Image (tube, rainbow, N blue to C red; front, side, top):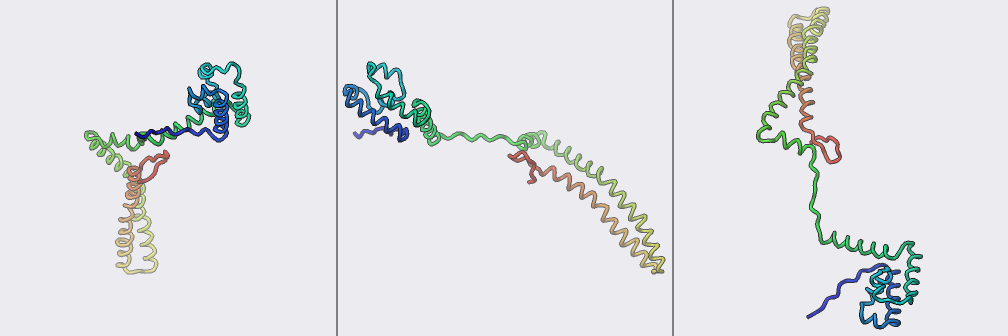
Amino acid sequence: MPSYLPKQLNYGQDIEDAASALQMQIKNSYPALAEKYPLRWLSLKLMEGDTHVQKEVNFSGDGAFIEDSVAHLKKAHGSDIESIMADARYAQASGLTHEVLKKPEFRKMEITEKIDRIVLNRFFGIPIFFAAMWLMFKLTFDVATPFVDWIDAMTTGPFKRWAEAILGFINAPAWTVSLTTDGVIAGVGFVLVFVPVIFAMMFFITFLALRYDDSDKFAQI
């Protein structure tokens, strides 16, 4: 039955070289330890300064070669070897975690979705709709009425009198005066009175077609 060896974590060229050199020293100087423990694991633990492993192997003060390896790494990296090796393990663990685990998507509910839960409710939706329509039409006519009255007053008053005066001054026929005042001016005025109403209505309708996007800015659908 085939056996599989776990993939070794690479700690970087400097640490790996120091660990390899330490393995050779332990194998040559302490062959009993080489038979009892995996040399790579033992070397890395000794370089980290693991107190339990140091107590177990008990070099009896003859561990200067370990300090030399660690001192070289400290000088090269500017920090203790234990932190360097821990960072390498955490980086490997983080990479594996991202490869094998998938974080469930968490999407923040937007303001429009919160509003929809109320205005599209099966019980409150229709009353809210009628209330919104009533408010929109009320605002539309409240805003448009002054402009409608002004246009109506101008077309039935000054514009009509000015046209009659100008046409009378040039002795225009009666049918021309009637066509201009009762046809053109009155007809155009009849159409123009709807412009403020339509403008105000479209203005307020735009607020019903707004959504609140992810960047917290209003955007038109």
